[in-house]
Length: 262
Picture 1 (spheres, rainbow, N blue to C red):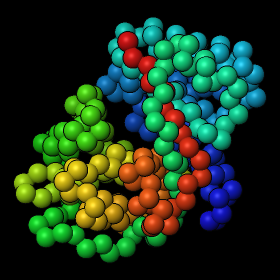
Picture 2 (picture 1 turned 45 degrees about the vertical axis):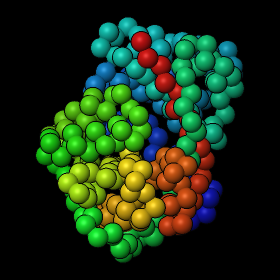
Picture 3 (picture 1 turned 180 degrees about the vertical axis):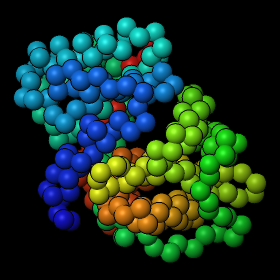
Picture 4 (picture 1 turned 180 degrees about the horizontal axis):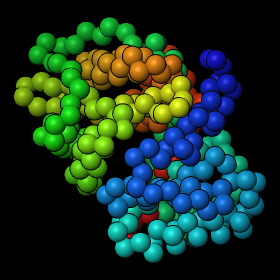
């Protein structure tokens, strides 16, 4: 199953809705929508499809989904996850009208884990390891926050620590050099599917172009294979997309996150 159409079909069948709610505090169904609450005051909206809704129905869904989260004072931000291959008339305009702000589109990448699980030489003084302690997770999060200019990095790190405590299968991997984290990423094996996701890949600017991110990706792919996963998926920025393409992953669609905050 390596063709574009087959990979996209597997993505829609296995990686939407249930697969996106791992670690959620609660999930509410509203028509075709899944309204998900995660730790750290984060709301998330996803769906398999919009059920053929026309533009007016889409506007109503957006309004009702936002009202659901706005009614909870603990929710500080909400993400609506759109996909480029969906039929969603008027969605962009409806989201803008409700103060959702689009981020940069990302490429949905899928491929065989074995194609990423290769030997990649590391620069002298760089080592890879899986991390689990609070201090290591915070160091990883701080680096990612610096790279992504993310003001919520501490909240995300605290949520990751709680996930590790719950033992939901998530793995955190880092590359270290000169006494600090220089590259990091997450592996999320998706229960009851053939997939594991690789997320949060970030490398400090000075350390880019040396094969470190590719080595970290290979380490996560090897771990996915040990867990019995066949495919790797990722929503990739333009920094990581070319690396994954060179490893044999294919771009099957795009995803654009829309963000709302109080």
